Image (cartoon, rainbow, N blue to C red; front, top):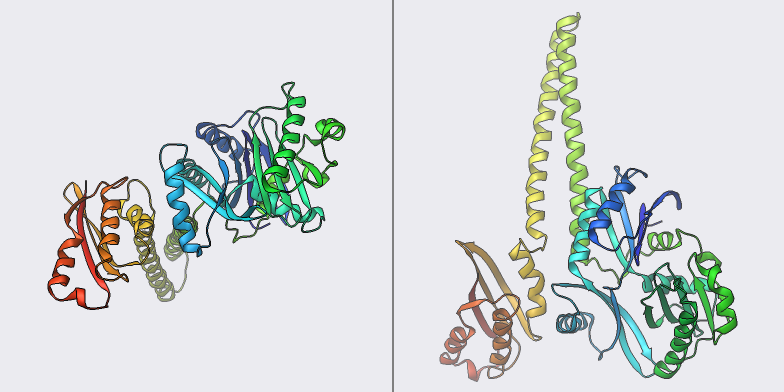
Amino acid sequence: MNTRFGIEWIYGEFLISRFSGGKSVEHWQAPYPVFDLETLSRAMHEASTQIDLPRGGDVAIAYEDDLHTHEFIEVPKLSKRDLEKHLARRVEASKPFEGQAAWCFHPAKPGQQMDGVLLHLMPKRIVDAVVRICGEYYLTPKRLVPLSEIISEHVPKLGAEAEDVLLLIAMFSERVQLVVAHGDGEVLFVRELQYSWQDNNLDRLVLDINRTIGYAKQRIGVRAERAWVMGEHAERVIEAFKADLECPVEIDQTATDADFWIAEVAGLPQRLDSNLIPRLARRAISRKSVMRAAVLTCFALVSAAVLTSGWVEWMLTTKRVDAAQLQTEILTLEEDIVALEEELRVFDLEQLRLNHLMADASNVPALFFSQLGDMTPDGMVILSADVTRTNEMWQIELSGTSQLPFDQAPQEFALLEARLSGEPWHAEVTESWRSTWMQQLKGGGAATNGEVGFRIRGVLR
């Protein structure tokens, strides 16, 4: 296992397992639906009384919910950096909820003639809350992964040929997810059926699966050659599926254990791209965990040194011992205590620095710098960026250059300034790019082919 703990929070089902030697040695399942953050916090508290959480460790989370969307998007040929900027603008324009979005993607081919990505999208507030709740129980989230990504990694284990087209039917108590994929795990299509198949809806489920098979054939030009049923409810539906589905179907026996999804997500590669916890946040979380452990270790060492010093003093007053030697040991221990206290001071400074780096609503500079790259138009280079607090407002100053010709650069400068003035920053520009541009114009900048510089100053209230 790549993590010590695994969590399945899928369509209201909550399970948590602790792994040792690659096997689940403890697990707990919530006996009630977990559909919101309040219930999640309750479930984590109850889990902490059932399994060994206080020692902490890394955790991987399999997540799926109705608020979590999956969309295939056709995209042009772009570099990874430009693709991420393109998708960030797409997400901001089309997200179906209020507030910031958390998203991830991986390359996909939704049709025979199409290149694109599978975009996973959910509210960022949920990701932040999950990270915070896990932290309360000394768990360090390494991955928050959509269900379809776990299925994609599992499909090659079915032994099909790389170009075979398979339909994966993931069964849960309240929902069903359908994934059409090649035998090598490349996902072609994802569909969620947002109703409980147990409420006398089995005929409806069979109808929707057949419609999905037909849609995949019509939309992406492939027909599922075989279907696999996954999940602990597979035995309850397999006979109906064999009788009425429009392709051969069988149970994936390796995927019927109650802790299957937890084991799969805990064993995923560490560098999986489709992770809803951003890379910067993962580094900050890991560093914070290491720092917490180091601080606790230092406290333990200081306590041990104090106790040892007290014991030596007691020995000195109650036993006949070499006073000079003991005095030397006491001085050594006191020096160790001073050194440990200095380490604690350094850790406190590091913690303060880490807090400044964490991007949240109360840390405007970190949040601003985390989004600056997305606001900067292609072809522009930010050479200097400063955000400082004065009275009741934040002063910002940006400077940099453009590679465009002198007469075309203003278009990029104006675009950056408009993004600063618009949502979500509403910056009041106190010095426009026009000032430095006019200075360069008067200095003969229009007749040169060099870089065009700019400076923008403003206020965030």
